Amino acid sequence: EGVSFKHNPEFTMLEWYEAYADYRDTMVRIEQLVEYVASEVLGTTTVEFRGNTIELAGPWARVSFAESLEQHGLWLRDEAALRAKLDGLGVVTDADKDWAQLIDHAFSHYVEPGLISPTIVHDYPVELSPFARVTDDDETLTERFEYFAAGMELGNAYTEINDASEQQQRFDEQSAHVEGVRGDPDYVEALSYGMPPTGGLGLGIDRLAMLLTNSRSI
Image 1: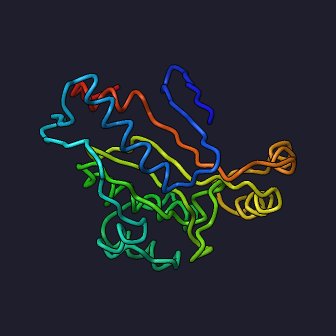
Image 2: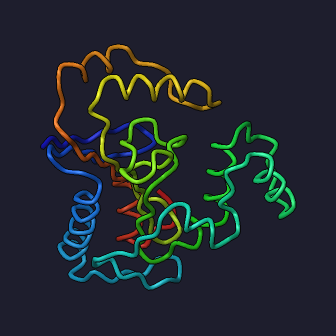
C-alpha cells in the first residue's frame, strides 16, 4: 500500500493505492477515514456546513451514476437527445463538444448540488474514466466512484486497470474524445512488467478541511 500527498497552490491531495483491493474495498476505507478524522478533530461525526447538518459516519448512501441521472430524466446515451433535453431545460451546452462533456455537465448541474449527505456515486461511464477497470456486468461502465458531501465532490477513486493491452486500448478510445486522456507509452510499458489488482483513491484535503471547519471557501 502506498500513500502520498500532492500539493500545489490550488489544492492539497491525499492519494493512495492498495494492492489486492478494488473500488468496493476503497469505499469502506474512505468512509472509515472521514469518520475517524471527524471524531479525532471535532469529537463528533456531525458537522454544520452551509446551513446543513451533515452526519459523516458511515455507511454512506450509494447510488450509481446512471441512477442519479435517471432521477432527473437525464440518463440518455444518445448525444443529440441529451443535448436537446438539456437545451430544453435552459442549460447552455455550447461548450460541450461530445457526449462525455454533456453527461458530465448534466451531472454537475443537476445531481451534485443535491448530494448534501455523504454519498458515493459509482459505476461511471467508460468515456469519463480512462484508468478505471470496467465492471464485470457491463463493459460500458467502470469500477469508479466519486464521493460527495454538502453538494461538493470530496474525491475520486477506482479499481485500477492493471493490464497493459487494456490500458493501451483505453488510451486509443479516449483520443476520440475532446478532453480524453492521450496515450502514455511509458505508463503502458510499466504496466506490462506487472501490477497486482489495485484500488486507488484521491481525497481533497482542502475540501475536507472546509467541511470540518464550516468554511465557505478553500
